[in-house]
Image (cartoon, rainbow, N blue to C red; front, side):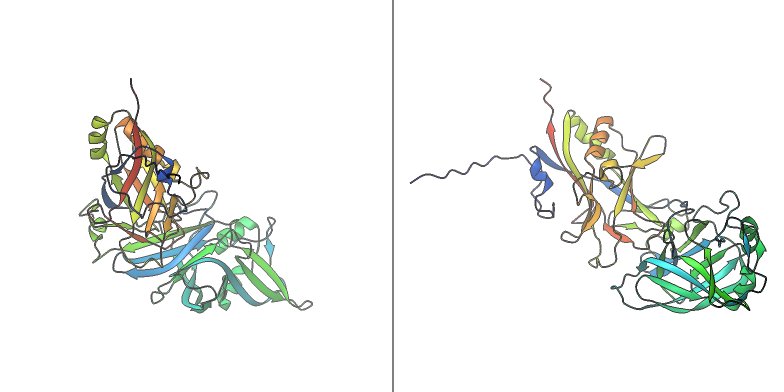
Length: 417
């Protein structure tokens, strides 16, 4: 009878194997031979910078409230443009029947199953100042525009699947009934603001890249019936957003009242979009200690794990992104964790959420190797992807919890002989 021999090749480790690493068919750590270790991090929550919001394909408006982030409001501004560069003539013999705004919807917050009716109270007001001339007047999320005391729509609507239609009040008729050039029309009409009523805790993401996002005038004349004119409110026009936060009574209130520059991340870290909060992590102490003991270490693989701090994972951002801070204070993407700059990275290691382990995961191999090479860490910052157009937020475990935010990596010692 033959003898079956099982050969076991040991790999040195500084922590026990964890079953929550690698939810794909094969854990990427099995691709490498070396020592497995964990980076001990310090972390904190900080306020996000005011965001440039002009010219993006998606815009958001609405409200939400919760015990973690207090109250948040988003207002969307857009121009109304004519369809022809030569101008418009809608005065002579034009009898307007109705004006309907169509908004193609990308996302609703809170999320609901497809085709589920969602009621929301939307308000459309006319702007009192130009959104832009040759350049944008309003570009940042902390800048608001003045509105006229002219309301084009103020009512409850029901969203079903892919778009909403708002039948404008008749006071918009005379605003749109112009005989002028395209540039003059922009200056006369100004544009409009979109917001939710205070009693409507919903956020709506509008797709400006969709040609069906438009303002349509239905009209007739004495000699013709059933005519229409399409005004442009999509990507060909100017649009921007204003975000407002009230953190009163929340754990991150010290950030808003400027009594603190950061909130300690020992227990919980707060990631909020719409100019809200981001997370800064630092591993300088680890670098100091590790480089002394392993000056020639080569990192084969590293991943940043962001375990959720709440059991409910039904309303989460799709992705978390990372920026690295340089000595001069500038930021750049952590490229091996970014799905845009490195599309060939392992699927599932690009900052997306993994339901099996209840964490976000980012591949940071090159980033960690660079930090070990230079010995200096000026900070790595995490933020919600699509933070200008998504209302989904996340709470991540801090550094002092049983399942902390951490970087797990595999390295080997370079042979210097």
